[in-house]
Image 1 (cartoon, rainbow, N blue to C red):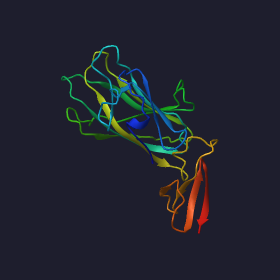
Image 2: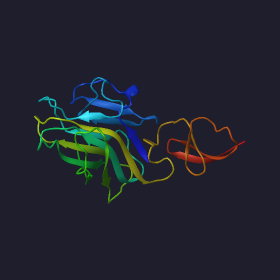
Image 3: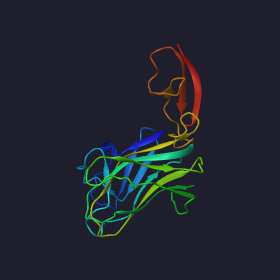
Image 4: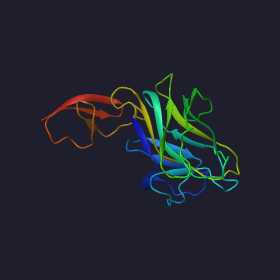
Amino acid sequence: MLAVFIPDKENMTPTNVYSDPIILTGDVPGQTWRLVGFSNNNNKWSSHYLRCFSNVEGQIVDATITTGFPIHGNVERVEIDAFLTSAPAGDNRIVSMTLQTCSDPSFETIDSEYPFDYSDLPEGAQSSAKIICHVDRPASGKYYRIFIGKNAPTQRGWFSIDSIRYFGSAPLGALDTPSIDIDYEPIYYDLTGNRLGRNTPALPGLYFIRRGSKTEKVLIQ
């Protein structure tokens, strides 16, 4: 599973303009996410979500969340925790919400596109619901982008996202390995694949140690 929790204010540039990109970085070197069409209200929103869309004409743009690294594993399902804020009756803010893949980070040519089911999103209350997308033709080594299409420049209300989780099958560490060419610090795992962190385990025994895309078994005495 690869998860991005939004926002991480320690590495988020304060912005109140929906057309400006927001860059999030993960705990793995080189792992970056590019968010466009979102605002964190100069870091004044709740620490648990970001908002896209607005009631200010001219700030409205389609929202995207893009991996700045290829996911080296077969993503089979994506879950988003999100909610809609209240708005006048019939004011539908979202016209499309899809998961897109591309062979390069430009997304000039979309390789595949899968719809999310957002019909059960709660309105009015700030309680999140899961939105799920199933990938029926998994492919490894692709960049992923979530595309959220706006309705109209004059629409009111927000669509808010708490977190995104990617589920799939891959070798140990593949889903969160941005590149194979970076000299990463070691990350330790137990024999069942549970991540232990970067520090050498205190208890002796067999462990997996991963550096970037390379994984080996080591004996700690």
